[in-house]
Image (cartoon, rainbow, N blue to C red; front, side, top):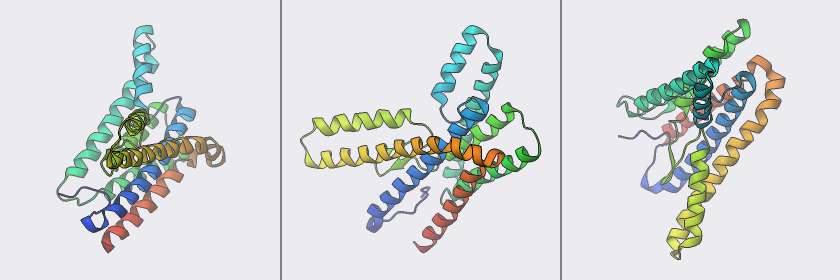
Length: 233
C-alpha cells in the first residue's frame, strides 16, 4: 500500500527524496508560522507540545486552572489530529495524503472566516488550530530513510546532533555520506520552522484576523500541485 504524498518508483527515488525534502521544509515553515501566531494571539503553542506539557505540569502544582484547561485542550486536539491524519494515511481508499492538505487548509479557512465575523474564544481557537496542526504533522514523516517531524523541532534538533556526531565518528565513506545528507535535511527543516516563526509577527500585523489564510492558501496550492505531479507519474 502506497501512502506517501509523492509517488515513488526505483527510477526516480532520488527525485522523490528531493521532493520530500522540499515538502518537509515547506510544512515546517507553515508550522513555525502557525505556532508563532498561536503564541502571539493566544499565548499558547499549537504545535510545541513539550512546552504545553511543561506548562501543564507547572499549572497543576500551582493550581492555575486556566492554564490546565488550555494545555489539556491543545494537547488533546493535537493528538486527535495526529490520530485522524494517520487513519487517513492508512485508509485503503486513499492512495496518498493530498486529502490531508485540503482538510487542514479547509479548517484554517473556515476558522478565519468565522473569526472575522465573530469573536471566537481562545479555547475554541486553540482546539481548532491544534487539531489541524496534528493532522499536518502526518503528511510527511520521513525524508529518505530519516524520520522527521515537521510540526515541532525538539526531535529535529536531537536527530541533527546525533547524525552530526555519527558523521564525525565514522570512517566509512558511505555512512559519512548518509549521515551528512540526513544532517543537511534536518538543518534545513529547522531553518524552515525558524523562518516561518520569524515571518508570522509581520504578517499578523498586516493581515490581522486573516493571518491564517496565508498558510491555508499555500497548503491548498501545494496540494493541487502535488496532485498534478502524481497524475503525471
